Length: 94
Image 1 (cartoon, rainbow, N blue to C red):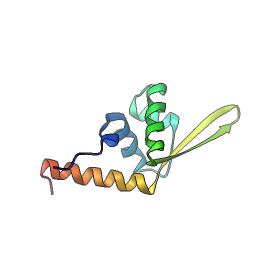
Image 2: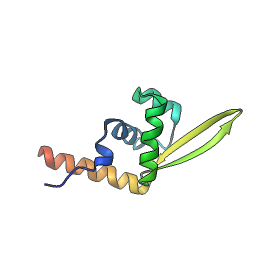
Image 3: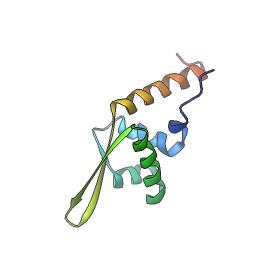
């Protein structure tokens, strides 16, 4: 049996990817609110997704505040879709 992608199998990373698959981009505050995560935990998980090439991260300033925008990459989209297909096979869902 094929192993599920451990990077996506984490609850928070899977939630982030699920959100990003349905929007053009999402900022850090939006992701934090939607996932009910702490800033520190979300930051660590975004770093892991970024390091894997699953998301792109763009930091900018709005006034004096930092704004972090995240987008799913083609590699991330492919990995997420494969994860869903692997999960369906595991659960025997067609």
